[in-house]
Amino acid sequence: MRFGAEVEDACVRFRLWCPKHERVFLKIEGDDALRPMKAIGDGWHELQTDAAGPGSLYKFVLSEGLTISDPASRFQPRDVHGPSEVIDPATFEWTDADWRGRPWEEAAIYELHVGAFTAEGTFRAAAKRLDALAELGITAVELMPVADFPGTRNWGYDGVQLFAPDASYGRPEDLKALVDAAHRRGLMVFLDVVYNHFGPEGNYLPACAPIFNDRHTTAWGAAVNFDAADSEVVRELVVSNALHWIEEYHMDGLRLDAVHAIEDDSEKHILDEIAERVHAAAGDRHVHLILENEENTASLLARGADGRPKHYTAQWNDDLHHVLHTAATGESSGYYLDYARDAEKLGRALAEGFAFQGEAMRYRGRMRGEPSAGLPPTAFVAFIQNHDQVGNRAFGDRLATIAPPEAVRAVAAVYLLSPQIPLLFMGEEWGTLRPFRFFCDFEPKLADAVRDGRRQEFARFAEFQDVKTRERIPDPTAEETFLSAKLDWDEPKKRVHAEWRRFYRRLLAIRHAELVPRLKGIGGNCGRYEVLGQQAVRAGWTLADGSELMLVANLSATPLPAEVPDGRVLWREGSCSGGEFAPWTVLFSLRSVAPDG
Image (tube, rainbow, N blue to C red):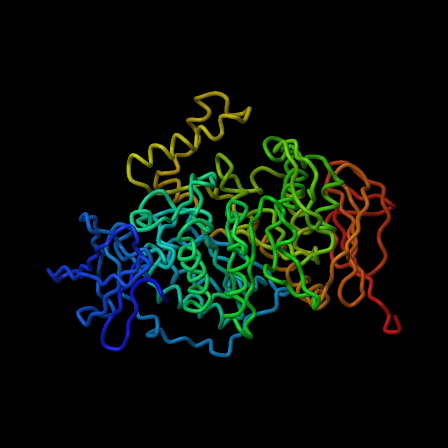
């Protein structure tokens, strides 16, 4: 890397970009010497020394005496304010030399939070549960952000050391062991990365360089500097980080958080540069780049003449989640306002990807989205739960606690057997009732602000107008809020939870056997839909081999007159007979094309 500490033969090269200071010193723990670094131009300071080696702990001392950790540290054994550790990445012995990843259409993704996935909350403990995921039918694990954050618990979106796995989960070699173990089981590993902001505690970059650009503002304040003076080094820092996870940790892809909040007026947008550099570095490996983008910018998902993604593989499809969630729960407050009891949006999100493709949203008061029907269905990641949609609720309610079982089964069948790429949120597969709430661990003053802000955030909702009701919202800074989110791996042994898991396993088995072989090379404009009634649709897709996948879904509590589609039934959830679909009935069928066409 151009940044940070690199082991070179019998010495270590330290490098820091710090244009705000003419003089910078290196302090190695256990050594009283304060070593001056050489200014080598353009704000860079460098020192090569044999006084350090793998395992050495160090800090940088700036000209006015401020002591900071390395902004490009590979590991922070004592958290964000502690010393950085020299890591030699070449010492880990990988066993995945023949691994080339998996084609995107084979993806069945499982999102997990490392700290809450197991009782231990570590990379090593997560590796012990991979067999259960592979047996379920999962083919890709998506880790919520692991970049070093302040404290011992955090969702990960407050990271400040982009290159360092958080020490509460384990050491860098432990994360590599998790990835290596996943590859031995045929599982891809994706990592959630955050390039739209830095966390509020422990970010020392502003003391060194113009990391922010006040010309742009985001929900977190000034935007990361991708297009003003000295932005070329900031851009290189972020691109290097993306490459770091792909090359040094053998990740199979990245999920880029909230790219709608990345402001960049450069001739080449930073998102384009990241994608180009990552794909160039990946070579013959299958490496997939996934977006979260509230603006529904379909052009970021454009395909080339060969049908392959030009830059980004897929986007999380919030629109499909919202229509399925409102159908299952009946909720219509907040951003659900625009989706409740709207079968037109349900059909459109299933057949074309986005429900909003340039239309105005009442909740936002402005237009949203771009036309998406021309994209293949595999350009969209479908789900009924994820960390946001569960954790951003005041009490972190799981879908199983706010919707009847028959409704949950119906919407689960819809998203798992649609041609979009499915994503499960940890514990969903056995219908866990454990909440997943927002949690963090900041210094006291900041913790007070976060606690108050969390409760004020819900003040605009009718059900939280009363102050006493808001005070019931769990304290995100309390340790018990985090502990309540940890999965209970004894739950799947209980009959009701075991039945849920068998249900998910059967649906994923059908998907892999019947759909995946027919998704390779699928094109755009392949979907169509028809509204049958409130929360009821008929949808169909022409798959890559010419076969037709058909769906009739009655996601309502009232019977629906409808014809059973032709073809071989892949799955029936609920009851359909005598020309009537019972409440919460879903039927998928497949009509294959004869060899003669």
